[in-house]
Amino acid sequence: MRQHTSFLFFTLLITGLLLLGSVDAFSQTKKSRAQLEKEKAEIQKRLVEFDKILKQTASKKKNTLGELNAVNKKLETRVSFINTLNREVRLINQEISETEKMVKSLENDLKNLKEEYSKMIYTSAKLNSGVNIMTFVFSSANFKQFYMRLKYLRQYSEARKKQVDQIEKVNEDLALQRIRLEDKKVEKQLALNQEQAQKKELDVLKKQQQDIVKTLSQKEEDLKKQIAAAKKQQEQLNKMITMVIEEEIRLAEASAKKEGSKATKTTGSSMPMTPEAAALSNSFAGNKGRIPWPVTNGFISKRYGSHPHPTLKGITVDNDGVDIQTNPNSEVRAVFDGVVTKITSMPGYGGTIIIKHGEYYTMYSKLKTISVKNGQSIKATDKIGTVYTDKEGLAEVHFQTWKGLQVMDPSIWLATK
Image 1: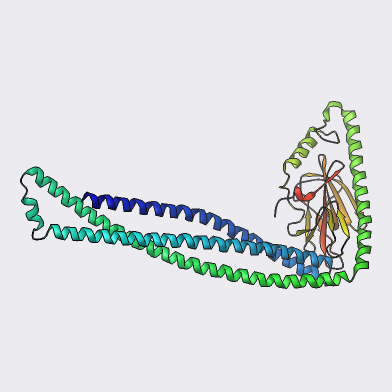
Image 2: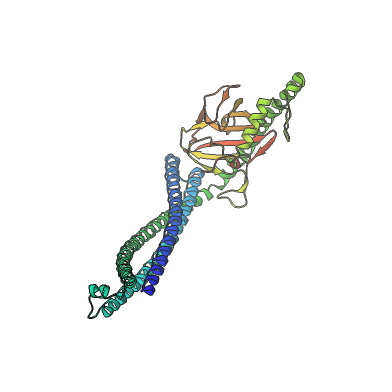
């Protein structure tokens, strides 16, 4: 009897540990799945956003650089989506493998429990052969033996009941795991179907990309002229903002000299600042990588720095900021608290606004309308104008960040999308 009870306890313990491990693995898998689903939703949202921009850009004129930028961004995002789906399939395969192991383990447990129960029934029948329970109890030689026989019968009865309960519990768990296994197989097939559909969409985009590149390559001379003109316009833009910042530094130094100790110079700063300006500057610096975008929708179509031209071999284009392609007539917003320092219009860049944030400056160009005034204090995300849409249907805002006279990569300041 002691062996039966020990075996039952051991079986219950092992099964419980297996189920506990399964719950823990399921919890981790659920967390990974939640992260994947969130990532998929964000990518799908961006795909819809980029598709809208692409359609609006291509509605006026086909095969333009703006259209190519939007197609390239959609390609990049769709590849990311396919990679996410691949990860999902791998995760589902892992879940299927774990569930199959659990099913096998439960089947073995069920088999062992049934064999043990059969042995208990057989042993009971053999021991009780020709002797009924009442005779067995009342034939005791003394009271102590009578008590021990009653206790034995009670323990034996409880052990058999626990064995039956455990068999039923394992049966239920096994049925649930089998259902879960079938659900996972269906889920895997759906993910594979979705992945296949995305690959077909990717092929369509690649063909569209090739057609645009081929057409643009035939306009090499026009594109080279545009690049040369854009370079000259950017030089004028940078000269203007440099002059504005130099004037701001001169005024700050004159003010500091006049005010004496009221103005301070922070570490690494190129200009003296009031305590309020220093606090604003420190706040701007502390929000690196978390600053909102100047437009709510869009993507970086031209990155900061020097990069090969997307269609012309051997041609490099330079950018002292980032260009963000967005929807026509989109609102342009201030990215941080500050003061409007300069409002002007520049060749090739249209309406331009410079906003001061302590020793930091942000510049917004290619604006159709401007809704702020010089010297106006503004808050982060306040509307400052609307984006300009050119004759090719391209709506793009040019955005720069400066620390004193040092131009910086704006993308390291903007929040991740």
